[in-house]
Image 1 (cartoon, rainbow, N blue to C red):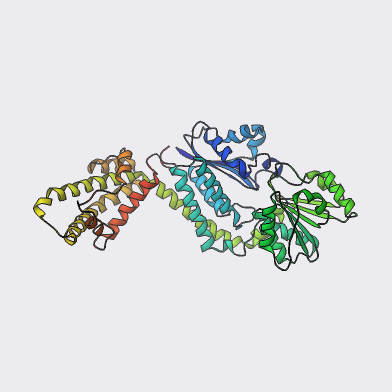
Image 2: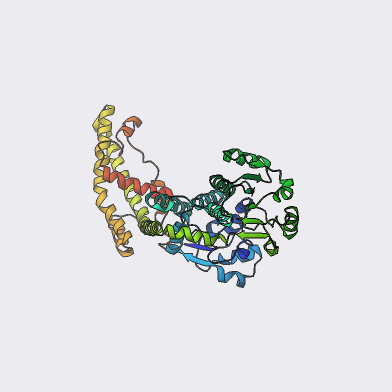
Length: 481
């Protein structure tokens, strides 16, 4: 098995192409299941935002036609799409995913929305049943790395987003937003962020409209302050839009909601006073032909890149620190992936030792006589501690061989200690709590988490069990293909 990541983003494809393969929230689960049905795909998820569509999949080999899925599913000529696609495998795919989650691959480096969007895509894939152990382990590691980048570097300071860049553009266009009327079309997260920035910039009036009136009212209540937003019924959209100097649109409509004929009507009502449309939706809410009208100025999400470039310059040093941190996290993940190949052998070794320990205690049970709970706990702790100390050197040797990728040495060690690398099913069963002394309370009191246990050995045992619980086993991505 191997990891594959295929996609397009704002750097490789224009918005005219990206909007053809954009996947709405309501369609994401169905599309993810369709990808999962592709022969050779074992696990998958899809990240679809205004700036990217990326397929993340665990596949049987490099020849699995994941790249062709986008073209066939959306009915696009594969030769037209191919120049805009990027493809990563295994460690490179991990690196790209970690950078994406940390917003290092975003239009605005450091923007906080992408991590939430990746988490949402992962949740949808989970609910759709297309995620198993390998993507589970990968994504949890990516989330941890992204949070670490934001907390340990300055990349998240003075948070910016596409919405804030859109408002910054509007302010630069007019010089000041004071006294200007702004119309927010769409009441999603982008609109909420834009609204908050508009209030900070002193917008004179804010209109809010959404297909679901309740969401528009909720947004108006949340951002209410010096300026009280006015909620506009969606069926009054075109009548109200003519009142606005700036329209910021971010709906999930599959087709433009503002077309050339609407722009002509707006200009007539405004007596040719100019209007600015900032379209941060993908697919676009504003038809490109609107830009042909004198007095109508349209900026789509690709136009925002020029404004975003200024933010990237300011964050250059923080981004370098974050890149270094993410690179280290990718290397740590890769090292763990190599190390987990020893997990079945480690768990099998533990299981064998535990069976011997329990058998010896049971054999001597009658000779020990009637022991108190405290005495039973002491025997339990003593025997577990001895077993853990004896197991520590061979477990370290197994993991060291796995880290170094020394398969021959790993097999020799397994043979020497009479454990099997192929005993994955046996190892999984061994991940369950082992039976102990006949009397439950004493066994728990003397478990390896107790004060008498050797903590280092207990930690080694815990790591091995958690590896098995993750079910990242021999043949995992990046290790055996």
